[in-house]
Image: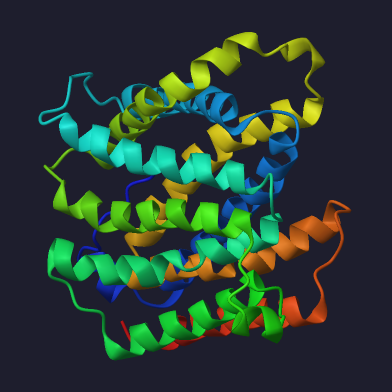
Length: 309
């Protein structure tokens, strides 16, 4: 996802009552929208290769982010200073998105969503060398509990597979992308030079698009768009608009009312919502052991939510 998660200011820490509740509700909706990107992305991955599909999505995303930054928010159009920052951040996001859709060719949205929940724990690990930040023991406990549930889902609730370390190709591919996304999160703060958040997000999107052109342009040109099913158009539109503009605005809203660690923790609900969406879409329901793993990740989130700010 190419959204900037700003550090919480005074309101982030001291929001109480209804303001705090609205922040939590915003992140619940955020988790639902992110889960949709895995389920709907799985539909699109069946009809197109990952490289041209991602380039198509990001071209549309650039248009959406430009409309937000320079239209809705009326930010002056100017080339950023130290543009290499956005090339690096965009490269990390490009790898994340490519590996996500490549993984969906080998494994299920539920499994990729479970791998995604390892990202907060990895980000906490990167935060120390990148930012010098240490994770509080209570927050770390929530991260570890949620990660344990994610591992259970990744191995499909099979103890023998865990003992044999039997990980599928799709999960391994996407894990590389999740590592890149985990590094991306602390680097956002490290590379912050005071730009408006929406402009920062726009330039990261541009950087990601530039990286996606070489592997994707040939396949995109050769694509016969008239033969693509409607589901592909719907999925690409969802990814470009909803998981860009929608989640960006929700993150901005929640980050002004909740600590950053709790905002990030809502990613743990992703597998649970993916399981629900997959069932609703008629793709089958997860087995009871996998459901149990998703429940454990939700418990990790509950622990983080109840910890004092």
